[in-house]
Image (tube, rainbow, N blue to C red):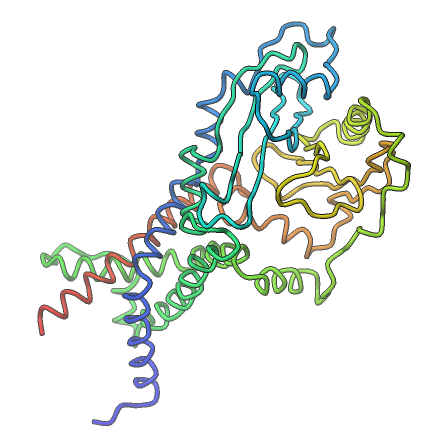
Length: 393
């Protein structure tokens, strides 16, 4: 009997699904399982560091915070680090510690430990300058997990494709899986939506159902997670997300024309404190913001002005504001508030939170965790289906 066009189409889709799955299955498993592990990184890290995140200083309402430059000096004395501090993350809630970061990135390094020369965080009581804790972020468990998930611990400029290409193929696998899953008739449909193992004893059938039914229920969320992951590997995905959500706008907002004009002689030890005070005046309900110290670094690039990133929420990055200052005078030059951003900008800002589920809070992370585990299981159950058929023949 001759195969119909529909059957031929499904036949070749099935072949592609099989061989692409066998080719990329191990990488998809690694990417998925590391994504699941990383889902609760923030919650676990915050729990482990709770004694340094909150400094426990008493009567802070009656006390003054030390100048940022004075805190910088204390941090440098404590660490004796040869590289300059890169930035400080300042919480608006003064019950929390300031976090100072050393960060040097060598684009020529071929793996995680050669690419990142130093990545260290130092937690400081802003009222006394007491150093509460210091952490090497490069070798931390979750940073290694993130690096495996992002680039298999390879140089990020090209390592992202090592994970990005299998993820792109996985998107096809999800779509082709739905095509192959789609039932021929009503009777077949009943068997595709739920497990019915009362009379099923063979592990092959149970494995087949696990692959198909779990794959079906996970596919829609998995497509979102995979697509937002591709955002970090392929510029065209980022551009496409922006264009779609901005309503066809192909030009991302650019503020490089707003430049520092005051002479460098105006910059002094209080400039960062002046900028800090202005940020907290404008956003007293924000969670935190970051101030760059403005030193030269290994991967330095030109900064036409001084930009401050303000994170509005503790659990998510999708609501944020950008302030531009004159880095010499400390004068505010421009405010780009979250409410003033177009939908394309908001979609780009929300990408990370959508990817890990944080945009929906802890329940979103739980969902992302479960879906990532299912995604990790699909290459395993798919391989076992192939292996079982191979042995049968």
